[in-house]
Amino acid sequence: MADGQLLIGNGSYFSPNTLTAGAGIAITNGPGTITITNTGGGGGGAETGTWSDNLNPGSRVAGTTYQNTSGKKRRVSIPLNGVFPAGRLNAFLEVGPASPPNRRIWHGNIAVPCDSSSEHNLTPQIEVPNNWYYRLTIGEGSVENWFELDE
Image (cartoon, rainbow, N blue to C red; front, side, top):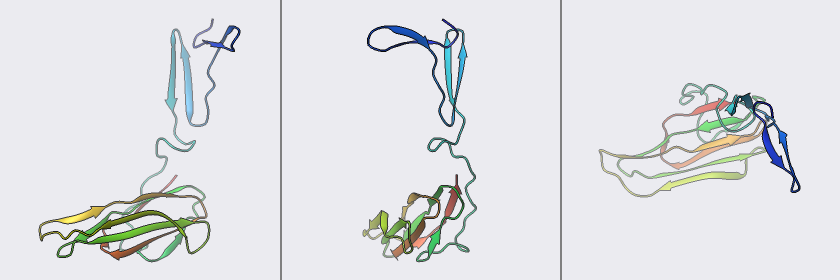
């Protein structure tokens, strides 16, 4: 058998064979070893882009519908606050192939008051396919930051 080969059975007998790498995978065969590594891309696994600077305040605000026209999948991460005196936080994220988006992907609701030294925080994260729309709606609370990553 050659370096990196395995015995693979078909129910009747075994034959020497090697593994085949898929998208985003590298396979290195050595004497008595097989090394499998992630090379990035291929969907899932390692991130392949750079997170944006904080887009809030500025180009992203709650209640506005945005479209992902990057040509790539977009990750969206939005830390939210519910602060003293009420401390309440009620928000949801929607995505969809048409505007306005109609698929509620995330809903966060905290209805417990907090004191002046504390706050409630939630950070929803979603993935938006290319050409899809997305929107954050806030009933109570505020947007602390808004980050996006196109992969």
